[in-house]
Amino acid sequence: MKRRLDYTTAAPDAYKAVLALEQYVKQQSGLDRRLIHLLKLRASQINGCAYCVDMHSKEARRDGMSEQWINLICTWRESPVYDERERAVLAWTESLTNLAQTGAPDSDFEPLRQHFTEEEIAKLTVAIGVINIWNRIAVGFRAQHPVDAHAKAA
Image 1 (cartoon, one colour):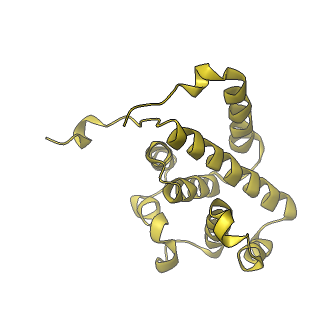
Image 2: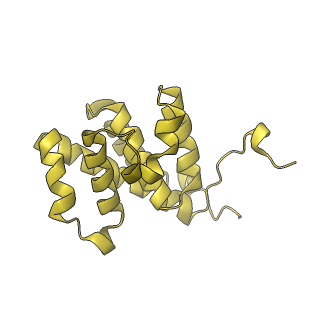
Image 3: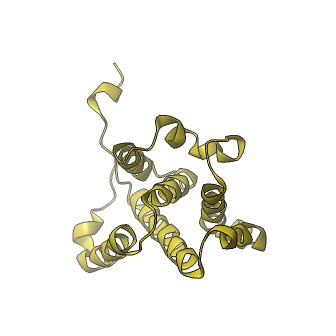
């Protein structure tokens, strides 16, 4: 797959705007890093964004998330690894990432109210929106993730 364009140089102001929102989510939102990793990985999996799945799985691992926790995100409904808070975030992430199909139903929103304040729900929703922007940029412009030396085929 050939990269279509370098969005950082094609529209540096747009890139900086998205990056500023990303920095807000990471550094100023006060959201639990574990939840940020969770929603970034799940949205990126749904969107088929190899670049973001690679990057965010490495970041999650670096921040102490277990291999099992990272690997089972794509099958979270069948795994007891995730607590109720995480399950609420995963359901909301899937609902918003697949918005055209789901319409963001109450059944995915209401569990958030049991575990998060309205402020936290709003910030989680922004975080989901931001990773969806990154996914669309990376997939749309065919950004390529680095291939680790040991991962290359013989």
